[in-house]
Amino acid sequence: MNRIQSVLAATDFSPDARHAAERAAVLGATTAIPKGVLLHVVEKSWLDTLKHFLSAPEEVEQKIIDDASRALAQLVKEAQQLSGFALEPQVLSGNTLDTLVEAASNFDLLVLGARGRHPVRALALGTTSQRLLSKVRRPVLVVKRKAEKPYQGVLVATDFSSNSLKGLQYARVVAPQALIHVVHVFEPLFERKMIAAGVSDEVLEKYRVEAQLEAETEMTRFIDESGENPRKLVRIIEHGNAPGKLPEIVAKWAPDLVVVGKHGRWRIEEFLLGSVTLHVLAQSRCDVLVAE
Image (tube, rainbow, N blue to C red; front, top):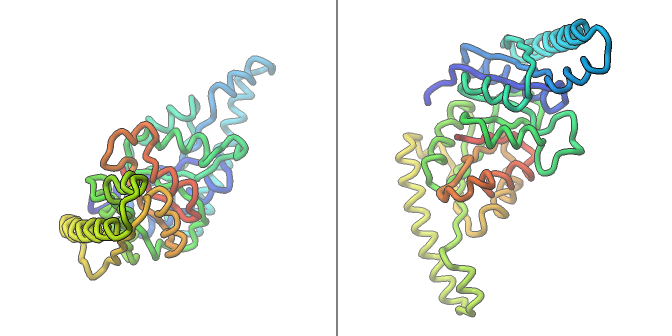
């Protein structure tokens, strides 16, 4: 992808969702996105409950939608003052998750906050955010910080899969001027079983050296295939278990944005969204772009 044509930011007016609106506007301004929408979904089940217990239900529903529209217009105004980019406000009613998934299908990028208004219900990530990531077939930018400026430093995690390649290409689209670190964490096949079997340190070290050389060759091929200028990238290859090691690397380099694939090479991870992805989402303090 050479350019983002459309971006959808979702908000429930929580602090993280506010940051998401601001980031979408900053992206719109810095990458010249033609179309940007800021969407708030009024939960239909909640409206139905109000209708059941209150008199004049139609007036109550309209007041809630009007209040949401005013709050949305104010948020659009504030985001535009920050960035110079005007998002189009839109209020819909329906099942929040289903409505967002359907709406996102018409955009190139979905931007949302890491946590919504109910952090107590969240585990590693806001409930709606995590479920959206599983269902949306678009890249999703999960925002954790206030968008004070365009992304300056980006870290792209790769396992050399096609998803990782999309992630690197997308990183350059959303952060055209950023320094990009491309990170691969390798763990030789059967290493843990070899350790459990009592294989000597000398044999293990030789095995790891061979695995690192193979990873370096794969990294060169991966970057060549991406079309990126190798001189504009920083390569990082480290030994370890990726779900645990990658958050350590992120903490060390402190990027503004981390880019990960929704799934790795092994599609069985799809049931867990991808263990590496979930670890990064849960533990990183910066924004995370999940490439589809």
